Image (cartoon, rainbow, N blue to C red; front, side):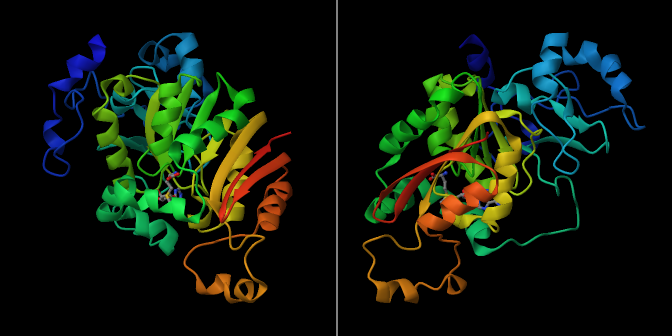
Length: 340
Ligand SMILES: C[S@@+](CC[C@H](N)C(=O)[O-])C[C@H]1O[C@@H](n2cnc3c(N)ncnc32)[C@H](O)[C@@H]1O
């Protein structure tokens, strides 16, 4: 709490014009926020040892350095800055890939771990299911009416969905949870507050969703210093080492992903053995949908990748996940599968 209150009166001066309300972290100070002055040549394993004093203790190095991986080559990133998965620590840290030397840092309030982080000219336009949620308006409205509408399709609502997910995640307690496609952090905040996990990564491709998430977090001072981090990344290129994550949650997201198969393969890659994936989505149709309507729901005509129950199970299975189970209510499905 003492740490949190010391941030509350400080606003980052450089970022006031682009994003006035954030962050409440100290200014761009060379001691607090390293400007990534890593050695210019490629860093080899021995260089990690040289960086140790700045990275903290050996123990810190182990848990912090290897948490995030380079989205280009999946090599664990080296971290320069204070340890911890909380927002102030990540904001003040710089990250660098020891294989390709690409560096990553926080932009506004989130750590940008997309492949295009830092690129100046290249602009990638993704399919509608991704681009729509990058809009500031949609991001603002998301928890202010948009998400509530899902109830009409059978979604039980955030409190109940959270409870159901927690049941599936029992075996992942104490591990790292990644809330993939977290939106404005509806569930990330609940997972972080539950204290069930060693850390919670709220991850989304939308810059504006992450900013909304930050706005919700900062209105609850207990969340500022919990083990919760905001990361921008593409679900098809997750910035974590293989086998490093205990739980992956993806609420109302699978239908938005450009390639559900690439996404589920990535999720499978980052899960540790025994790790659990829990997702919810809208079904293309359910058992009560009349046959005549089923044939009209042509996926090729839609902006979203709605799948059938059978397809979701098949997708998880073909990525090597086991122990598949699901709960369906109208068009809502919550499914769970485990990495063997
Ligand atoms: C309908 S929202 C779901 C938000 C929240 N998880 C929930 O349960 O309400 C879908 C989210 O998927 C994200 N998304 C779409 N494409 C993505 C991608 N390629 N990588 C990561 N997130 C993506 C969007 O930015 C959006 O925030």
